[in-house]
Length: 114
Image (cartoon, rainbow, N blue to C red; front, top):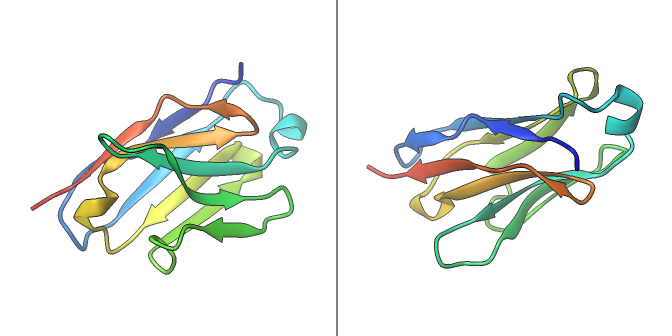
C-alpha cells in the first residue's frame, strides 16, 4: 500500500481559507506521476465524496459544491498534491482524504465554524 500523508487541516472561520497538502514520500517520481489523484471528503454521517481530481495529464475536475472556491494542483518533483480552499463554508466541514490511484491517506480534519 502506498503511504500518503495529508496535512493542513484545522479550524477556520466561514469565509476563510486553508491549503491542504498530500505527499507520497516513498514513491519514486516515475511512479508518482503515473496515476490520477484526488481529494475526497467525508462529513459526519455522510458518505465519502469526491471534491476534486487531477489526471495524469493535468486535467482537473471539481464537484459542483466547490467549483470556483477550491483549486487542486500538484508538484510532481515534490510528489505532492494540494487543495487550495477559499471562501470556506460550514458545510465544507469534513475529514479530507488524499487519493493516489486506489490508495488513500488517513485524512485531515477541516472544521469551518465561527
